[in-house]
Image 1 (cartoon, rainbow, N blue to C red):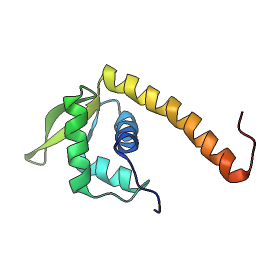
Image 2 (cartoon, rainbow, N blue to C red):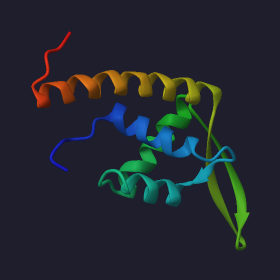
Image 3 (tube, rainbow, N blue to C red):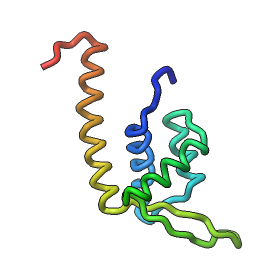
Length: 107
């Protein structure tokens, strides 16, 4: 992708991916789902997950899977509120950028 992905957009994408499963999802699956949208490495995503946890947007818990613990991430109420804010902002932002590219007049 030609455009850089800033921290806020990356946070929004991760929160959107995690929100898809009410029970939460694990790190590797989050990485794979995010990679379907943007090119990003695991080493970039795990600090994002830790930051979102620290900011009370994600709840973290471990679940046994195949004899090993797997770390799961689940949206908190604060994370859901932050995702709604990001979503609203994205809709407005993307409309304005699309209007510029298509030559529409901005209101």
